[in-house]
Every structure is written in C-alpha cells, then in structure tokens.
Length: 307
Length: 293
Image (cartoon, rainbow over all chains, first blue to last red):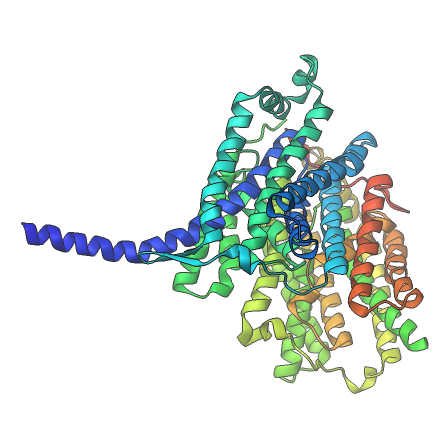
C-alpha cells in the first residue's frame, strides 16, 4: 500500500517536471497578451472601432521606455511613467485626430476605419524605424537573472509578468464593474443612444476608453519590451497576434481576451513541443480559424443581432 | 533616368494589374480583402519555383501561378461564406499571414527568409524595355477584361449584390455564385501580377508580399476610387511615381528612404480614407456591414 502511494508520487513528480515548464511557457506570453488583447477589446466595445494601431501603441511604449532609460538615463520609475504617458497620449491623439474626425464626416465604416488603422500602424512602424533604426534594443539588466524552481527556469522579468499581468487584468475588470466611469463606459458599450439619453457623453467616454486602454497597453508594452527586446517589425507581429487572440476569445469581453490568449499560447506550446517552433504562427492561426468556422463570434463573444 | 522610368513603368503595370484585381473584390464585390497579397504571393512563388527549379518556361509558370492563385481565392471564398464584419477581416488578414508564415517556414519549397534569387526571364524579354512592353500589354488586357466584366449584366448583378444582397437574391440573382466567380477572376489576376513581379525583380522573399505591399495596392485602389477601372489606372500611376520623389529629392541613407516611402503612401491612404473615401473617380462607398449591432 505504502509502496503504491510512493510510486504514484514519483510519477506525479515526473509529470510535473514536464508540465510545469510548459505551463510557464503558456502563462508568460499568455498573460502578457491577455492584457494587450483585453485593453484592445475594451476600446472596441466602447467605440466600435477595430483599433489595430493598438499594437503600435504597445511597441511605441516599449521604445519610449528604451529612450528614457537607456538613452536619457532616467530613473526607472520615471521611465515607466513616461512611457505609459506616451502610450496614453498616442491612443488619445489617434482617437481625436482620426477616428473622431472620420465619425464627423460620416466615413466611419468598418472597412474605412480598418484601412485607416492599418495605415497608422504602418506609419508608426516606419517612424520607429527611421528614428531608432532596425537594430534590436535589449534590456538585459532588467531581464534579470534566471531563477530555478524545480524544473522551471524563469527570469526576474518573467516573474514580474506573472505577478503584474493578473493584477492589471483584475484592476481592469474591477474598474469596469465597480467605478462610476467604468459603469458609464459599459453603458456606452451596451447602447450608445440610451447612454446619451441619461446624460453620459459618448464622445467623452470614447476618449476615456482610448486613454485607459492605451495606459494598460503601455504597461504591457514595457514588460513586452523587456521580455522580447525591440525591433520595429514587431509592430505588425504584435498587432496580428493581439488581433487573432481577441477574435478567438470573442471581441468585446476581457474574459474572452484572457481565454483566447491562453488557448493560443497552449497551441503554440504544443506546436513547439511536438513539431517545430517556426510553425507556431501558422498553427495558432489555423486553430483560431477552425474555432471561428464553428463560432463566428468567438468563444465568449455575443451573437450579433441581425436586423 | 530612362532606366529608372522604365523600371517604374513596369512596376506601375504590374501593380496596376494587382490593383485592378483588388478593385474587383474590394470595389465591385464589396469584400474587404485584406488577404489579397497572399494570392499575389502564391502566384509569384508558383512561377518562381517551377521556372528556377524545374526549368519550366516563364509562360507556363505564369499560367500555373494564375491557376493556383485562382484556386486559393476560390477556397477562401468558400470558407468565408458564413463570416462577416470583424471576424471576416481577421480571417482574411490571417490568410495573408498564413501564406507569409508558410513562405518563411517551408524552407524545402521556398528557401524561407532567404527568398528565391535568380528567377529567369526568357531571352526575348531579358531587357527591361522589352519586359515593359509585355507588362503594359498584359495590363491593357486586364483593364479590357475587367471593363468587359463590370459593364456586362454579370457586373451589374455584382453591383446589385454589393449594394443590397437580399434584394438581389429576391430578384433571382445567385449571389454566392456571382461573388465566387468574381473572387476566382480576381485571384487569377492577382496571381498574374505576382508571377510578373517575380520575373521582373528576379528575387522574391516572404516579406515582398506583406502588409506594406497590401497597403500600397489598397492605396492605389482607394486614391483612384472604388469600382472604377479608370480610377485604378490613375491611382496606380500616382502611387507608383509620387513616393519616388523622396528618392530623387533627398540624399538620406537608403533604410531611411524606404521608411519614408512607406510613411508617404500610408499617409496618403489615411488622408484619402479620412477626407475623400470615394477617391478621385470612385462611385461607391467602402463596404460596411449591415449586421453590426
């Protein structure tokens, strides 16, 4: 009896030895992208704008962090505040200068905003390229040393991601559920016209959604930059990854962003485990596509009312 | 200078074919076709691979590229049948991304990020100015075919389906079939432009067919105007030559010039979408989807 228990324990430890590294490989990028996708989703649900340039906000925050910390030698806390502020300003500027103008001229259609947002993406990517050059920017100091827990090796920054990202997601959820502004945001997301009737300015709430969403994107961008280093071509890659994860989970819900993100990372980890890490982009997209064939609105998305 | 202008004119003809093909789906069929460069890539890779590795003549390679791109477009059309709005945009962008990803990773077929160099041209059109004749002739042919299609009863049915699918179906138009045929024709011309590009530049890699090029072709269509062949002609002309001004007017390092050029055409596209979404000669608005809540 005792022997039987012991062998079970040994087997369990063996399984954990394999499972824990995989789990950390899923959680680290999964949680990071959950924050990015969640803030993208928040902006979408309030403004109905598919703000793909959000991916550019993330990477721009990373570059702002690099500029403040490495080029200007600012202290860490100031660099964090600076890059978050840059992200927020960028998001708000894109909203007020482009999306709101398009709304005013009535040219705000899906295709119109989509093409506008992809153009912005390309402009920002090439501005970063022209300003910072195409070489990779590293943050080896901040990545920290490798810590070993049993079979798992994680760097300081990966621990930071696993602590901060869930906190950010919880703050975002609580903010939307409990605070006055959060409730107003949800009211606009739910029904703009009714929200206007009870005195909530949907224009202000759209601006608010862009500000808050971009702040979260900025914070995720700092962690992203430290973890993966920076090159300008990441703008498009990060955007596409964010977009697919959000659509998979169902756009417009933060829970969907978390689920979509973690599921995609699971597929990614399994692809890396059984096949070749180069193919992860393909398999994760095909997985998303198969889910969308069955549920076009995504896993947690609400079915759209048809007129 | 003459060499540069010849070079640009060939690019104008090749991208003009691509823009006409995109306009068929984006303008006439009302599909927000973000997967378009994937089709161009299929045409380019098909022709490049069979002519460099299997010694096919260029003519056969181009035909193969057209067929494969048309088939891919058909399959894509079948798969996206039930999708709309954001999901559709994501899937189409994802198709482009899938082709890019396969191009990068299937190194046995595509040589991955190294790309395929040394793509051959037949003796007759080895020089750029003779290639220009071929490219312009094919561009004219494409223009003619697209005009014939869009002016025909089929084209009017297509326009009706784009503007009000339900009514068109009530009137007995088989909307799905009409759209599928359009996708196939568009795919074939996308493949043609890709194959021509491969044989003209003589080098392709996955990054030759991605978001920047997609934005370039979309800007050609939108500057000229949706659902207008004349517009696409003018748009392609403008978007081929205007960004070159940066090259000629400045002495910046080439990496910066590349970035500036991309910024210029993205900015032009942004301004057009914001202030004149119908373009110069456009007749219709960008597609929007009625089923958005």
